[in-house]
Image: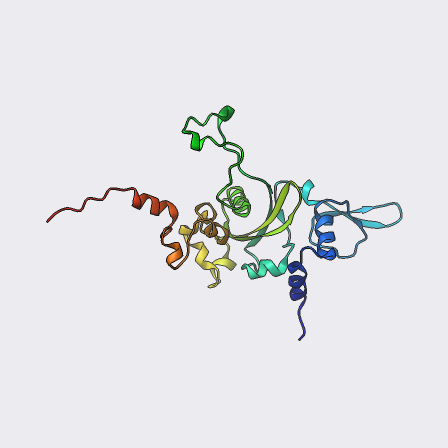
Length: 234
């Protein structure tokens, strides 16, 4: 069965330990790139004269700003599966998030609480790093709406994500019945309220008897269980 180009990219991405993908990810993130003017990836670069030929010198992911705009998605197959369209109104931003747990922000480690809550260093953040990337990009681009995001690379210190954003004021978005739902003001900063795909995963939502302790969210369930409700006698 014939496959399109995006299908081949999808199959390559499935095996991230393969020699091809490991080399590609390492080159994108770390190693210096000095190729001729052949088409090699979507990274930002400039054309320079290297003595006897013109070459493209790409900027590596670690050398770019923490949050910066990308001209096109690094993984077009993944971006399209998550709702991206190569038309006006859609924007791609890259974000870099530091790996590791979350240290409790207390002065000199003084939590002023009970011993069970005195931990500072080895705490595990309840949300994913991808949701953190979405929130930071959403704050940077407050006039856009976060649609989704996906992983593109990682090294020993950082994880890199690309975030799909939509311009709610653009006519191409407002006239498209498949995406104009996001124009509604209730979807402002949906990434900060756990409404994106990665945000919902950390809220404990689901169906069935295994989720009966997180109905409407674990905080809502805690409040319902700890609120004294005295019914009026009639």
